Length: 323
View (cartoon, rainbow, N blue to C red):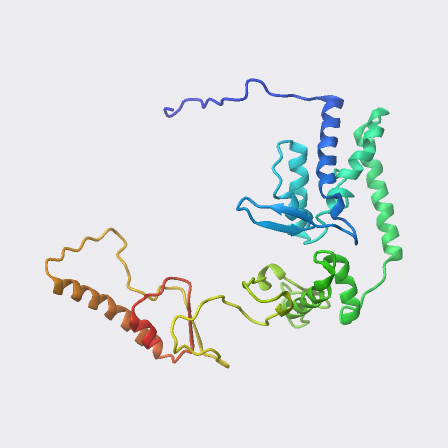
């Protein structure tokens, strides 16, 4: 296409267009179908579903978002339901099944849409139906406030009973108690309380902030048993031992963090080297090793126990011998 010409869009010659009551019923049935897929995954007696991922692996889960993201749909209303579950998982972390089935956040979820079908058949306008749903929501929130019970966050017993309602159904009963205790331990490890002497931009006094997306990770190590799972108060790096003389345990180490490679610096542009003798090749390798050795000597001046770099590390023996 030449510059300045109007772009030409090729669209489907036989599109399916729905309007009016037919479109409303189609959207409701699509949303209800998505809700029916994960309906059996809600509640204390929730059942697991077996999923087959594109790589051929088998996954057992009753998490609504994990199930729906493996489903490919074409209907716009069904896509909206799946996107709603994904947003709920990112913003809240729980309730991905409830938001689809019960309509806990928006009056566009499966069960509420199914109940509104009979109202639409009685020629009640959708705006009136949504207004009634909003009034019912406010009434439900008032009832929840009246029957709610305050929780002592410092009590492990009360916190565990609260956690079990959320993740107690995510695993079979054999490991439910273990996972709940690990979750509570992890939350207490990364939680930060407000400081009255902190600046205004910091966490307010009386508020405890928990940023699990930044400070909590799940590292899966092949082998072993689930009972061996634990919470590590620190940073875990899953790497292999590259030298037999490396220490297996270091207490209070001196650490150096590098944002540069620990290897021979390659040219920024394409470089050609012409070698006519075997000795020239050896000289080239010696020069490369010399540069790496100089880096190692500068690092050794700080007497570190551990060196971390986010870039590459040379495989020459001088690195393993000197650092």
